[in-house]
Image 1: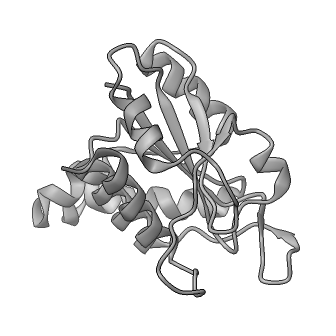
Image 2: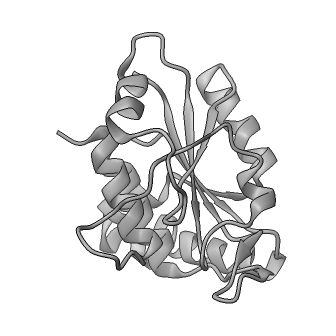
Length: 184
């Protein structure tokens, strides 16, 4: 079974008007995606952000749960948050390669992408005995900007409901996608 990694991208992402922006790290994204990642056997969860103040904020949240009051308050939360590394995408790919022994296949997720590899096919790739490691990229804001998408090797099909509305939070999308790829 493939080593699976997750990266939450905060730059370059787009805003509602299509402009390239940097989004803020939220405590909810840290906690909820880490908990889903831990549940579904993700090896590491990379929070990708270029702004030092935002990285420091994430560090304070993690410190509270890993070594501060939160450590004793809820050890399961700490166990999930221990998966998080705050970094940039290049460092995340190198770290994943060092952990897994091979460069990960970088797969982006998008609510707007048409086509892309389907969930059954991606799951089958992950379950192969000789599977290559995979890093799933999740975008914040209104999705990853084209320069980030161009860094990926593959696109994953979007999560779609029965109607036209398609604007899940990144936390919900990550949980659904991880369940489709690793759930029982």
